[in-house]
Image 1 (spheres, one colour):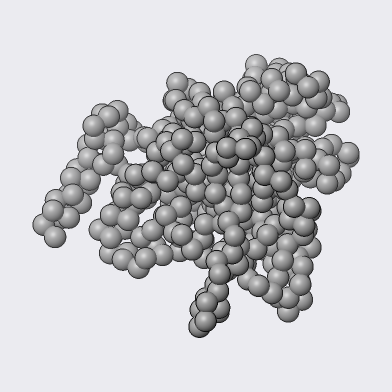
Image 2: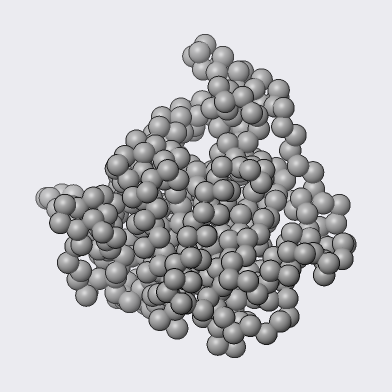
Amino acid sequence: MRASYLLILLCALVSACSPYRDPTRDSNQYECTADSASDPELMKALEPLAFRDIHLTAQGALVDRCQWDALMRQINNDGIKDDRSKIILMHIHGWKHNADPEDSERKRFKDVVDRIALEQQTRSQNNQVMGIFVAWPGLSMDFAGLQNLTFFSRTTVADRVSQSAIVGKLIGNIESILNKRKAKGSNDVFIMMGYSLGARILFNATSQVALYQTQLAAPDLDEGTYDIVDGPGDLVMLLNPALSAGNYTAIDSLRNARTQFSPKQNPIMLTISANNDSVTKHAYPIGHILRFKVDREHRTAIGEYPEYITHRLERREHGNIIGDESTAWYDNFCVADICLERLPSPQATSGTKRNIRPRQPSNPFIVAKTTPEIIDGHSGFWNSGLFASWLGGFVENTLNEAQSSR
């Protein structure tokens, strides 16, 4: 117990001695007071690739309202007629990262956006690819040896950003523009990504909307087949999320033996966790126990909660799995020999049938575990060529399925 108190005190001292000052909020949160038309970045509105930043304070306020206005104008082509469809990828960074233009996660996300843009050009696809990097104060100090002690203080900041609802507002503003463009014939696609605490922020911004949309499509009396569910955007991806299993219970409860999803359903939320993620496996539960949150569902990260795991992502010696037309494509999806596969339903035994959660084919909420070969540790997905290749294929298939279903 004494060691626990010392750890709490040390974490508090580390947070108090932070050499980084949190960014200050723009004095005008309502409109861009600068002459945004003079922004030279707007001249790139019609180029194949665009990349924008949205910077947030520790309270979820905008650091620069003009960033917001410039982004929305660019999505809307700044009033210029352009028949191309847009592929928009938005990413919220994780712990130990911030709004620095040289931040490693920003650079790696931009590499992903550049790769997708290059693939579009190579295939002569007439789409404009846009990247949006959402930055918040996830890095509070530059002392590498002490950064690991800031996880819990940064979790508090991440939750403040979530509570501000600014990310939900951002997503809604983007989708509003895209819906108007789709009504005029555009075939835009919007994919959102979050890593670590950024995944926590993204989940909090999208989960209630996703559940609401799912319930609107639910069969009568909770028995039968769901109508096609439209989630927020075209896909929400949570990578090694710092998120309690308890926060996912309402989504997991969609899995039951009385209802099913259409095999034509597209994925709504894809969660992927590494088997050897020490942050979610060890640090996460310790921190919650120190905060006296001792119930298993809240002290355990979703990727470490076996009952909620629906898929595995791993290397297959013989490559592609033979698909089943009675299930959605994401239940058996491979890129080369890296395959995402839905787990079989556990066998019911006498007296336990009521407690069995079926793995429900075509359920669009996916929770997958993967091996160190594919994602090695908490931040290993950025360094993994295998995962990058598979993820690129999954995103590409999501794009094709989303566009062909309209």
